[in-house]
Image 1 (spheres, helix red, strand yellow):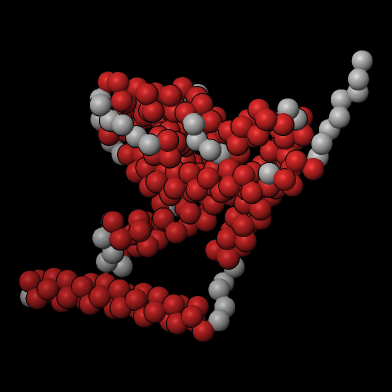
Image 2: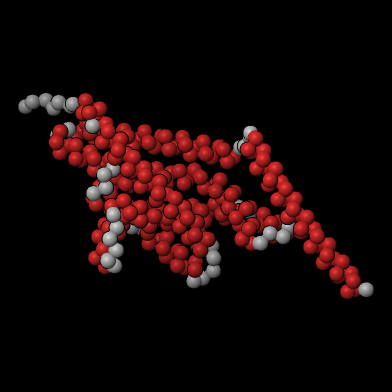
Length: 260
């Protein structure tokens, strides 16, 4: 019985293919994350609305949180073509599958973050004359994003790992590239160990990047550009407060005149 020989040099030999597969996985996950954030935020707002909007949003969230990634991508890539006549590329099918799955998870993340903002801040914004929509965009949403960032980072790491399932439809990500190389080198242990190491390294890098982003949001910004932005914000707040005071004063004068 001969001992198994591990040829670790093939990792360096096929480094270009492995890095290319990781780049493809990151590209699909990044596009999927951007669209999932929009979809998840819309679903979160819908979940917090009245019926029937809240019921439809809850149905979407509960259905797609329970669908496995493999079923989702097969349904999108093959099912849409057979039932609806919609032919998607491998890249497009991967992005849509990620949006369907992770849009539902991000919806719950955003919903909990939005509900964590005290209601008094909404009331204060409306008291100074802001419309409800502007209160949401300028007061509530920025604070909710700060709360949601750590979980969004975890979702992005999960998206990158989920792309490994998309090898079933031919996406040339890390696992599919590894399978192709293994078919000619017959070194499964070496190659899959390398693939695992690549995923772990990417997870550390993404976690570090999101932590830096989180710190940049939680700490006051510095520098000339940050000072200009803060000055613009102060001017805008002063203008809104002045408008609110003027409206209140006009209403008071009108009330006194009618009383006389």
